[in-house]
Image 1 (spheres, rainbow, N blue to C red):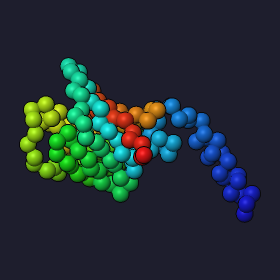
Image 2: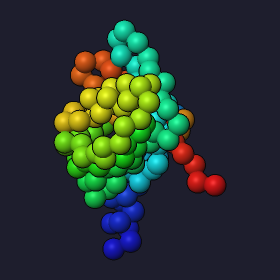
Image 3: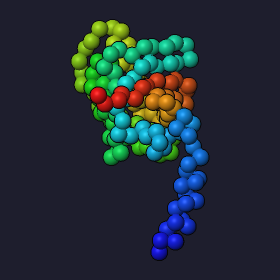
Length: 144
């Protein structure tokens, strides 16, 4: 029994061990789910918008996501498969904030709402890229 388990697990461990922590993959070494991410900016082909303080995202293994768009809180259903995250419709609070926060919030909501994004992690950073080339740039928040 033990010999069979070793014969099966060793090739898997060797195959999985070839990806380094800085490889840019999304996997057990650099999970996207269960992590609090600070939104740093959104980069579009023609401009970069810096995120206001408090903008964040958390994707859970149970298929839920939530956070703050820069002013309002949001929640959504998500599907994580390989390096893709598919967001369902965003549900948000309806607080009005100053113009810069609302401008950023509209851009972030548009990037996530009903979109499938490619996720790439590297060195505590996460980049979500749309099919149109928009990038949401995030940094892992480490617990104190």
